[in-house]
Image (cartoon, rainbow, N blue to C red; front, top):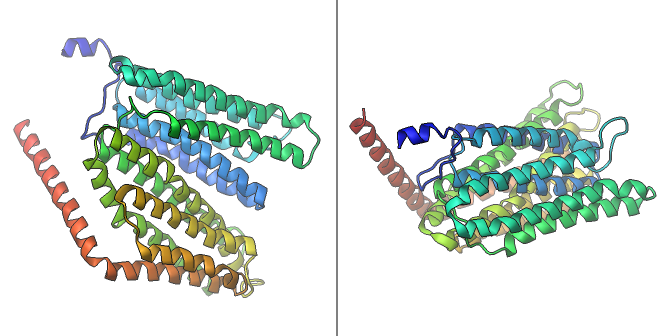
Length: 432
């Protein structure tokens, strides 16, 4: 066995139930840190309805790219065989995609076509996923039967992106060109997401519930990191001195970020992981598809909108000339709308995974949306303070009202981890 494996250094090994996220996957996610930051930067330069729509379309396609390799990492051991070479190639393609974000829709003259480069890199990223899955499917006929459909989906979606790059330049400037391009992008997204949802789940599998839940927790942390970076950039973007309003705004920004982190990671993520462990076969695949693939996207998009609004908020509050006036309505809408979208995604995730609804979060969504008209007409620092107050009220109320559930879930998770650590320690002692 050992000699045969030594002769096959590029062999791909299947993942098992105990597979966890490895360092290569963490390294892989770094290019998405840069991509998310570039989306926020490009959108800040074009803070209009069309600019926001462009950002959401790009996020949707990048999310689908990330999903593919999260799934691949759950099927195979990412650090062995030929997989690292494939992942490094994909990282390079994603990095190029991130460079093209500012001209993914409107090409800058004098170089390569940004929309065309985006489409070609997207094809490379997606088709290499199929290459990996072909190796995995050698002894899995049901999975192998799925791959032609996936390949066709990739070809069709890439064709729409190519049409979005090639057709609009031949149209007169104006709304017809803009909406034709957006229409082709939407078709590409509908093809990918529609095929992913309507395609038969047979043949696919979630080998490790631990790995799957952890991957999504980590990419959510990447989005939280982009949120902190963008808000910080907003506070230092203009050459103004540090002031008390800016300090207070920075603290309030962290309060909101910490509260939203807590809303996901404190209870629901732990309970959802336990539910994923308990599910098997097709039931596990469908939970992973619905709750993680589809319902985490609104959370990612919500954090992106929140980061745009937070950046504008700190830029406004940091300018002594306008700090005491109301923020631009777009900034307020992004701040409050981002939080609403994040919490709605979270409620959907909880409902799909656990079959429950936390009514304090429903109340937080309603209250946040209702406060938008008020926040538009008060000083920027007050508007940010109101959002922080809602966040703190959400956390405080759940600490009191859900104390029993919180304690039982966390104790069950701790017991499982201690048992796992004991088994690993015993194995290491036996094999020293």
